[in-house]
Image 1 (cartoon, rainbow, N blue to C red):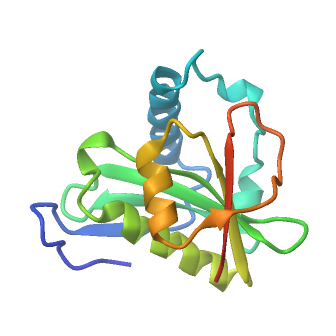
Image 2: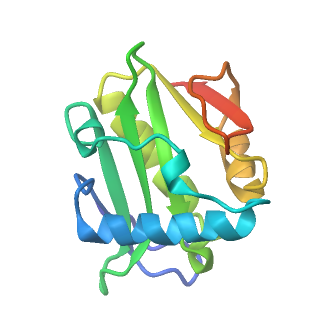
Image 3: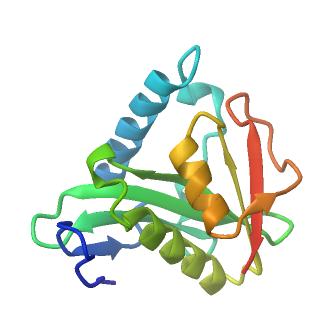
Length: 165
């Protein structure tokens, strides 16, 4: 999937699906975890969170996407979706490199993840986030996400949000 060039100086981007087991996805998640470690009071240890089987974020049970620059292939962000046992679709690990933020790419990636959730049969999407990720919270709230019941135990999560698709 390719998007038109945003109004800012951001280069054209594309979404690459089915990346759960790719080396590029692993590097993107490592950068994401490094940022969380810097931003969270007390740091972040991914070993203390649920480790998702790559099959759970691979069709038909989910998907993991990379957002890349069209011409260079540079990874600008990532995110995944997986179908939960009750039928909701969880949005996971949505992240953009810091210099890609504020250019509309987060909203583009979020819409793409919501579309993948619909394609997986989801009627509702849920997510969990730490309150220190203020940019993410602002994006989710502006996209219609509202507080929902907790659906996981995660020491780093302080906010649970959901949205009907």
